[in-house]
Length: 188
Image (cartoon, rainbow, N blue to C red; front, side):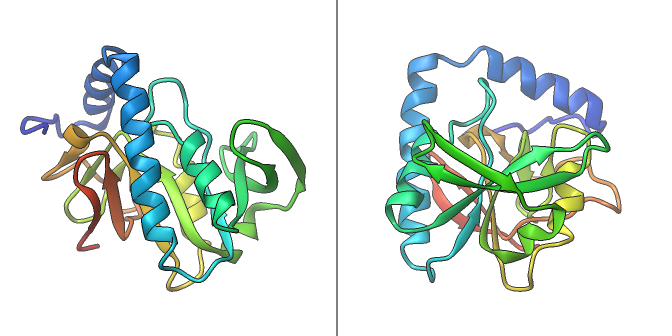
């Protein structure tokens, strides 16, 4: 766990990104499988509906297995599309996370249909605040989620920290899933 995460967002992002680039690819794959199992167990206890999920970048905790398991449970996936103004539109995904068809764009408000929202984070604190990539895309999108929507960040175990640098516009999440700890509800 990071005990000395810089309280400057840029410095914190640089430090975490560097650590992510050093991760062993085999461990990253094992972590992705664990995250998928934890997410599937969580989703199995919810009413099936729409789930907003992102496609992970090469250094992020993998989401392909999680997407496939959600689809297998009957969830309809929505993937984010980054717009020129850094906002997020959402498209339905008819595949298993490793292939498939992306349907037409449904606009920025489509996230309001999701009963489950999975968000990326570089780090997350015990209050539910997340350190994102820096564009504010998910903060804007999360403002449009419906009340009661379960919002979960996926991070590596050492990226769950006591405090992340935050600003007034940063929106929190309800829970975090890490490979070893599984689902932890947060105090947002």
